[in-house]
Image (cartoon, rainbow, N blue to C red; front, side, top):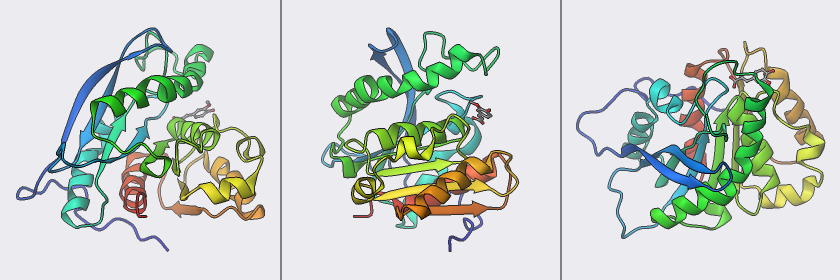
Length: 256
Ligand code: FER
């Protein structure tokens, strides 16, 4: 049983160590131009140490700044460190719409824009991860890499994560959207996936119209005995749910 995040979990604390969140750019051979991503480095970030990395993805209406603008993830994470509930990790907030104009403007359901959420798989694996690994002190084994996201980004996390279990051991989908591939496509070999996964997390608000996507995945996982967490919480397709998910999920990853 997962309890809702305690009161104050998302309130800025004055007298603690704080991490840093900043915008950086990397070159994407996949897209053919320079792309933006936000990167959070934890309190006390030091080149003396090596870090785990969580890639945290946005929804259909967002971009690399969506989490930062709506959820103050740096505050949630700083507080978790202060409470000794988090393994040190860098959190990368990419832009999951991998196309030359990746702004969240115009018709967000334009097929070209939806396709760009698929193209991101290549951008992440071939461009962004290598950039992070050559510019930050990070650990590079699969057990040191996690992927999670909300809605469209939740679908991406399942599609990309389960297709690259050699890259990711910790996978989380918050309110996964209909871009999520069919469970039997994502997990053709459930027992192999089970042995590689350290955490497979699904969550969704009970008032979310997209809940059946998560329920369908959960049913398949249960049927094939793939260990996972299915966390149905109160709420809709909205930030209070995703902030709570970040709080809950981030505590579970990189616990070896
Ligand atoms: C859809 C409904 C919702 C869909 C995507 C979404 C690709 C994404 C929602 C979000 O990211 O918040 O039919 O199809």
